[in-house]
Length: 278
Length: 91
Image (cartoon, each protein chain N blue to C red):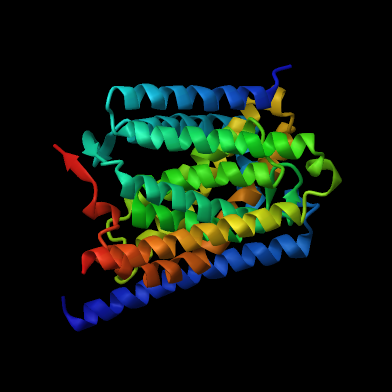
């Protein structure tokens, strides 16, 4: 590749990264300016208002079914390669089990450590540790993604948010880690492609999918959980998109850039441990 | 009305039983299922202890934050221990 093309790609990657970071800051300032008590006026809520509860329920229902199938499929040793379903071998040896347990401890502990700053009492709080979820997926694959699921579940209990809604959070957090793990082709955070892929899959798609997944579950289980539907789609869902994407857009690429080489060097990077069979 | 915490506990027990069955049939995925089951039930244990001691009502914070920080430190400590050990093994 010529030096000019390479430079142009780097400029493009930085422009995209800067645009994402500027967007999440803009959304954050917009929320602060309009007030936490006026979610219907937030700019991030507008797409949810346009689609309406019924439209969102249908779209999110599809994403919920797909996400749930993927979760159980991956745990049963099958995965996607392109559009084909293939068998994969995860050893689930001491290393993989340790990765899951340690990811759960670090993610759950970090979430609970900031658990006293509620946004929607009983359902969500300010979560800077969210930066770790896509990182664990990108670096450790399925064991890391499963660790984020368990960590989120533990944090829900510690922060007083445990309910049947936590089942949605369990797989929703798996999705945050799974989407960049599976859909990014370059996990190194060292190439323009890797950075662009991260912002598309790791920030945008995973945040929206996670939010819609949990929101659909809260809506579906409303008779048991009791959160009003208007609150779910008009406050909870847009807030979760913002809460996930804000910290992820800023912190995760830095952590990924620092941690990728030592993880890879020690043979803990998922691609060096998982075998996909044709 | 369904007792949602009883439901979550039953799910944890089912995962644990499933893991024992997998381990008994010498499936390696039994280890990860066992880990999920144990941590799931540990979580339910945390919930019941907090609920019955009234911590959720009388003042969850900073108790939860302190426990969170302790889990984080233990987790990071274990990562560093594992890290140094894997370096030693590679030499």
